[in-house]
Length: 231
Image (cartoon, rainbow, N blue to C red; front, top):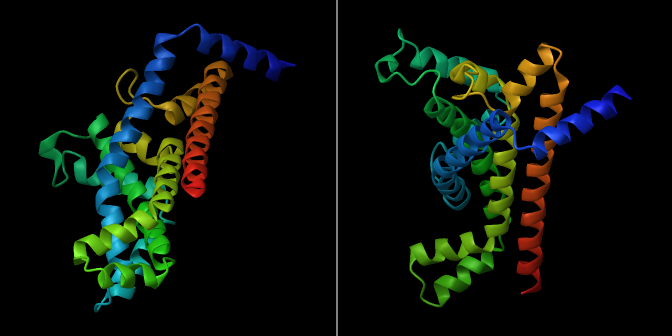
């Protein structure tokens, strides 16, 4: 009964348009969006390069990217904290406990997911796609673009996975953001804070928002994939 009451209060809080609550949501979405914008182009290019080229050290790079997938977020946060602290090499930039530091951390977390999934997608492309493009006189950049278009939905799925990881992680955001109210407090750090205080209403409200965001993004991706398949 207490859970039902807390959930009902959480829904009322969301519907009331609580400024503090929606400010936290805005920080989360903004940071995750910027992180993906920064991480996606180089990660997709790296994934495509590793999948389509043979060169010395390629296997080492692939293993490194795959290893980063399992790297705990708190470790990334710790490394960034040491780099951005006053005693660190980038301390003079004063980025620690700012949204910019959070964006950097989340971009690093999203990068290996985007690169690894793009790598797998490009490797699964029928080799005849590239061969046909070259036969028709396509230049190397045009051939590469054709292959990327073949895996565009897989890249979108990689972006969804990356978004899911960065918006739901807490370790890196807490360490480099500091959970400062109105500045760097995001959904996950706010949930952790409110739960530790025994205040579950706001935590449930933010949890509901996380679920809605995840469902919306995945539904949108499924819709796009369905339209692409029908074409």
